[in-house]
Length: 217
Ligand SMILES: Cc1cc2nc3c(=O)[nH]c(=O)nc-3n(C[C@H](O)[C@H](O)[C@H](O)COP(=O)(O)OP(=O)(O)OC[C@H]3O[C@@H](n4cnc5c(N)ncnc54)[C@H](O)[C@@H]3O)c2cc1C
Image 1 (cartoon, helix red, strand yellow):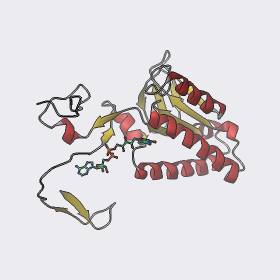
Image 2: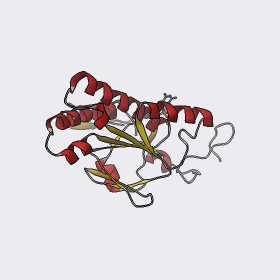
Image 3: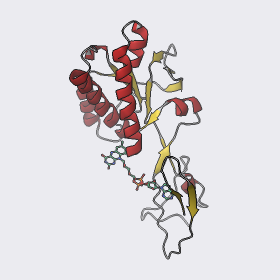
Image 4: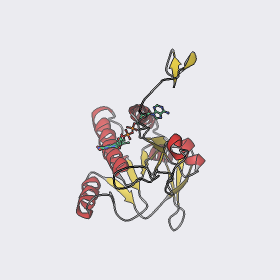
């Protein structure tokens, strides 16, 4: 076991300890999966931990400050006020809903020189159905609710590349969306320690278990 000493962001030192145990429970959770798209990893925000949420919230406030100052360059102002979430699963849908409310309520409350009509909050999803893990009517219900709150949807599309100020899609004409906020909620993969354990795994590196949740063999 390794833990840091001192400030969390700039530890002074690391300490390693060995613990004895009778039973070891491994419950390390999943990690973000960028499918080897390093530019997307570099330029996107993630939404997996409280820390991620705080970083994103601070970024949004900073972006609204920048947009409120930007009166001359209309294109820049437009891209600052465009927010893209990738992934129409639980995480993406929950994130896009909260993000949309947060941005619009902040503008109404604090940014008198920004119109909510200038804001674009876009969700990009690979298929034509939202929340595929649940019953179809519930997915449609979520889609309609979010549309009514002005969230835009780009379905049947993948985000395939990103820079600090734009996002590239794989749809018909490789559309480019100028924006300074890309949030990646489009994939998870097991912790490396799980993936490396010497037992049978599926294609996504998950351990294969039987009906009693026992590891095969
Ligand atoms: C934005 C968001 C919203 C969600 N909303 C819901 C919801 O409404 N309802 C719901 O049921 N689920 C929800 N989920 C899913 C839910 O959070 C996960 O399914 C759940 O947390 C998985 O639990 P876990 O214990 O497997 O992993 P985690 O909760 O990820 O816990 C794993 C822990 O292991 C630690 N760890 C990793 N590696 C090591 C290591 N080498 N040594 C020691 N510790 C380590 C990690 O730091 C972490 O604290 C949501 C997820 C997200 C991202």
